Length: 223
Image (spheres, rainbow, N blue to C red):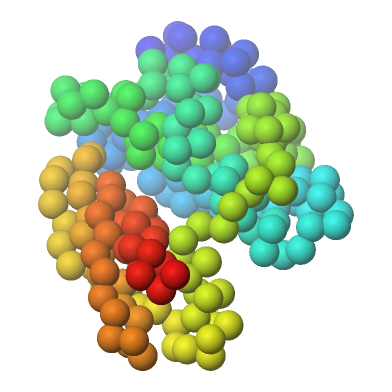
């Protein structure tokens, strides 16, 4: 696998000075204790800063809320997994146990985390400027596809703004249950709007997606 990393570096457009960083970025926790979780944490923040900077410069007339929604569209898990597949990142991942047998190389969460880890590794190896060059190259298709006019508000944001406009308290979210495996979890989340005594349930593969589903169900009632 290590011998194939030159091909991945060519696809990414960056050759690592410290190859151990790249190797770690591709190592899932199911394979080794020396894995990419810390790099993922770093890469998530680095990616947020870079995408925010790019959008700030590209859309000088956009307000904060619009920029926030555009950034969310670019860095969400689905988009990251899509990009990771385009890079064929799954072919280079080190997976162990159930992750390897359960199709982990094509799992959205694992792919998205690996891409963030890769960005974190580039940042550590060469700094923010090089990380931005890589992000601009890797994310070019997604960044070019953004249309501020078509960037809809997500349900949680829309619900919050609706309640604020009515002078009501903000909604509260509670995780009711988590099922499934660590690689394919299922979340059940409740959304509470206390002043109207409204409660709705949402489900999804992550806490965030379940919260969005619950907020959407509340909106259907309030509208």
